[in-house]
Amino acid sequence: QVQLVESGGGLVQAGGSLRLSCAASGRTFSSGAMGWFRQAPGKEREFVATISSSGSSTYYADSVKGRFTISRDNAKNTMYLQMHSLKPEDTAVYYCAARRSNYWSVKRSDYDSWGQGTQVTVSS
Image (cartoon, rainbow, N blue to C red; front, side):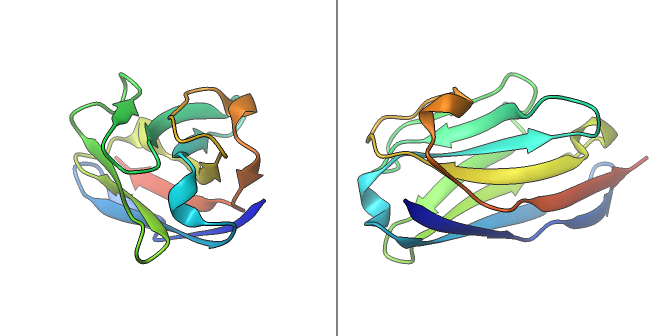
C-alpha cells in the first residue's frame, strides 16, 4: 500500500477556487493510477476525477468537468486537484486514492489506498 495525506481544503465562497494536494509515500508513486473522491454528509462517497500513472490520461465526473483539473507530479510524489467556480454542492470531504494499475478507474473498489480526507466547504 501507499500512504496518502491530503491538504488544501478549507472554506471558500461560491465562485472561488481551491487547490487540493495529495502527498504519497510508500510504494513507487509513479507506478499507479490515482483518483479523487468526495463524500457529502449523508451521501455515498462519489467519484470526482482520476489520472493515469503517467498523467497522460484523465477522466472527470460530469458534475465537475470544465471546473476541476486533476494533475500529478511524479517527481514530487504528489497529486493535485485544482478546483474553480466552486458551488455549494461541491461541499464535501475530499479523499485521494491510489491503485496499483497504471490505468485510471472511476470505481471505489479498484483503489487499495486512501487518505484521511480534507474538508471543502463552499458557502453561498
